[in-house]
Image (cartoon, rainbow, N blue to C red; front, side, top):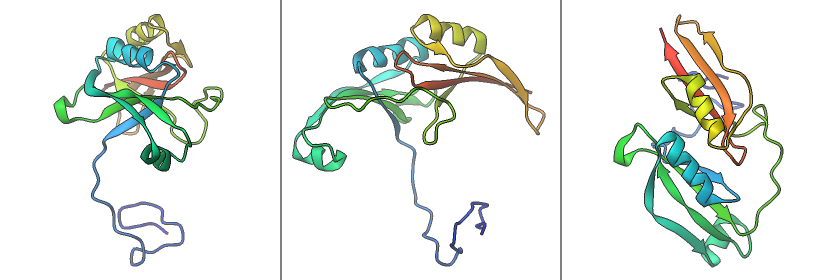
Length: 170
């Protein structure tokens, strides 16, 4: 079934589907082995700005919230470029207890990547690679149905998180 807004509603109708939440996007979280180094990468390469204070969180409330016994988180928020002082952030944390990371893949279910608009995709790609990231694919240009073109590529940050670099033209 499809809602009036065009969303697929598995087994629900508009009459029994919960109301859309009044929501505002706040942040995306990255878990890092070295949160200082990863935060520095995003500041140097993309111009993200620290939002103080740094976080140092532990204790029973954090254990209850994360479901991780003995948890201790450290990290910070970085204001993403282009949105001013109240825009969304990139939250970079480190857990004292870390799970193994699967191999980076752009086609794994779940969150796939974060994207940054840039003026020059090949130059931005080179900047990311020089700063310790790595290439995932090649730079490509695709024309969409509206006639606009997007030039884009995937790279990773130094810890293997996928980043899309994109530039649009008409």
